Amino acid sequence: MLLGRRRARAGARARQGAFRTYVVLDRRTPASELAGRLLRKAFPDHWSFLLGEIALYSFVLLVLTGTYLTLFFDPSLAEVPYRGSYEPLRGVLVSEAYASTLHLSLDVRGGLLIRQMHHWAALVFVASIGVHMLRVFFTGAFRRPRETNWFVGVTLFLLALVEGFCGYSLPDDLLSGTGLRTADSIVQSIPVVGTYLAFFLWGGQYPGEVIDRRLYITHVLFVPGVMAALIVLHLIMVVYLKHTQWSGRGRTNRNVVGKPLFPVYTAKSLGLLLIVFGLVAAMSAVAQINPIWSYGPFRADQVSTDAQPDWYVGFLEGALRLMPGVEWNVAGHTVMWNVFLPAVVLPALLFLVLYLYPVFERWVTGDTAEHHLCDRPRDRPVRTGLGVAALVGYAVLLMAGGNDVIATEFHADLNLLTWLFRAAFFLAPVAAFLLTRRVCLALQRHERRLLAEGEESGQVQQDVAGGMGETHRPLGAERRYRLLVREIPRPLEDPGPGAPLRQRLRAGLSAWYYADRVELPLTDEERREISGRTAGPVAGGVPEEE
Image 1 (tube, rainbow, N blue to C red):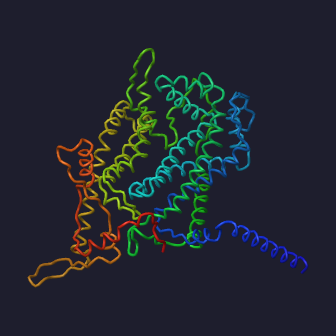
Image 2: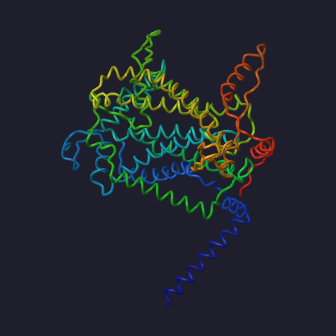
Image 3: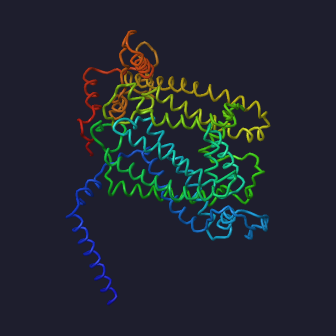
């Protein structure tokens, strides 16, 4: 009884202290106003909007598991005799990094599970960022006013690749050492400054003695710090700019319809957090990844067969394998085009295109309005075709990175496979673009027929002349709204042959982007209503939340 009274008094004092702290804070800052607005923030309810949250929760899991791993890992490359529990390597000279990773994996209770969770979470993190960016690209969510968030997202994706490579290279096993050997060749392929840069990074001639420590600091401090800051900025921009939403009844370009942050969306988000943690833990418990004891310690004169990096940098491996061996000697400097073009120029062009695409599309369309409704990919056939072509090109490079494995497993000629992948890298994206554009236009024509005739009812009737035919019923209001309310820019007018080249180029690209379109059967009243629904907020305004 006495213990219960003490607990009650302690709880009362705690609540009173918390209330006083809140009052002090509220009198000096707009805490109540900001908290109220944040808790009432509306989040549209659609599964595709959860992809970014999966990336966020994967990052949280990476921080938690990575913190645990730092307690046991030693990034030193100094060689010591291995004295752990793995018998095949007992007495072999290995680096401190490799020995500490083996100790963590095989001798620390739960260490292998945490290490595998860290690795799997890294793969999920990069994959979820990539798929989230694809969703943003295909739905046009990178347009004004969200260009800054697109730039932040591309930077996060780039940093995720760097972070993954640094972590992948730390154990100093034969597989990660092969990756560092490749990285050294890539750095040295940069004309003029490459050899100096490689000497600085590795602290001397390859393999050097300091690269693992530098990668370790980069992996646990520099890149995670920058990524955490960018994630916070990204979330602040999402809150400030409001969320995009799919077209539907009651949803316009001037409002946001969804569930409030608390308690509905908070409960859903917490459930997703637990699902991500649980699935990553389950995969780590049943699916082995990166068994460094099987690869053995790194030796500069050895390389394992069918060695491939993690999937997110596999396209670089494929590009290196497809590039012919071309080297020039210019003024005493060797220019290794066979490494420089696929491993330096290609990824640089890739990220340059990602950064500049929102600016390019705005220039082509001349569209400076705000957009808060998501585009359906079929309504933008050229943009969708370009995205699919890029994915196909990436898939070709990824498969080319395993051409030796494919040749071994299917008893195929490796040289023939290389030439097939070379041809596919140039031809497959073009074919994918043309096919995707035609599919998008075909889907638009199908929807026009649905709007004009209605959807099939499944009932067959006989007319007075004896003919048989299927009846149709009008589309429901929700589906009809979704099909009709869309934003498709008109091509810019042709400025004529006497106009400057820049204007003629812009008009030509605009016609290529938006000339192919399927007009829907609309009345003048419906056109006016759609224009009102898709009109953006007033200057300086933000969408209202419902």
